[in-house]
Length: 564
Image (cartoon, rainbow, N blue to C red; front, side, top):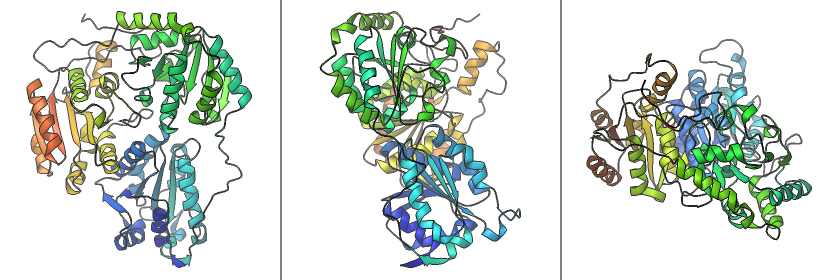
């Protein structure tokens, strides 16, 4: 069938089973938007900023495991989308972003709204394309979706000149993809897996180190099975919260810069790290020369570039986490003695008794940790939680009882303020039956606050809980600890009327200063059926603890902060 390039884009989206696209039109992508107008196979959500469109597609992808799709125009439309691409790239999120470009004849002439999208996006995409011929367009679109979801997932950019979208050609959408230089390995090497199993059986203090790859691989059930049959304790990274489940007795907690004392001590004293889809990020390892000095390392990852990148690995296994752990469970079941690790589990339990996650719930001001815990008590497994970046993000990771993967959606690698609200919109479109709560701060929420209008227009009832301490909280904390309280440009005392702002855009707003007000507001927000702002006044100077100072050893944690 002959059709225009613009029609091909829509047909490819339909063929890939995409139900929702997020975007913002403009001149170079206008032909595609004209075709969107004519179809009803997928829904398009008009965000109020291109960055928000990409974050919303990102949230949709993280909540479902499917490929998120965003669409933007050329020039500033694309540059606005770069932060979204980089956010998805750092966290390995499957996504296809389709951008308009000036006509081929204008590329390189500094034409109106021309920018080198391929050059700019090269460091922050898994792969990118500039379409130079309409005959190549069906193949490129097919490859884009395949690359986004296969192997180590990631965002793909397809940059399409306007004249290509207007040309007519034969459309045959490929049924399969064959890329000779791209062959992800899913099945691990049996010999290496056997060696890893022997190491586990002989270890005295083994530790499951679970990363975001376990979520991407949908490996949580088999990882829980591995933990159960071996009785090996587990720690989760920020990106892996929910894999083990909050009530699992084998879960020690989250590790890293703001991880629990027991988790960080477990990593410091283990004799065998079993790394499942983790990448030994600097926020997890602390000072590398002091990291897990007594441990051999099993590293399972689908991306061979990750293995041995930062730490020396004794048992490298390239493969899909789920597939490899299934084989590992099969091999280890007849060999393992769960009682072997009882002393190790007792040591970690004692560490947790000595220094549990703690906050002092006294005084007039609400404690942000209480707010997080209360959301968990009232909504629990029912909710999907997104967050922005800062203190509120760490408190959410520490204190929310995550029961399943894909319940927790946040920007871990890039640390993007402004991510949470549009990501929540994407998650809610993916799961309209779930309550979606964005836990945010008074700094982060303003970075994409225009999405109030998007959520109100489309009837997307996202609940935004603003933990309002009138500070850029995490930066203020560092200034308190390391800069002698020189609060340079972190005081956010001048603020909008949050309730009026939400209402002006078609939502609902609540100002909250007490526990009783919070309970009532959350209940009402859940029943409201519209986007809501819960402006919660919290203790201005509450800190996120424990804390490993930057560049410090993982075992050297600040457990409290005493005023000088």
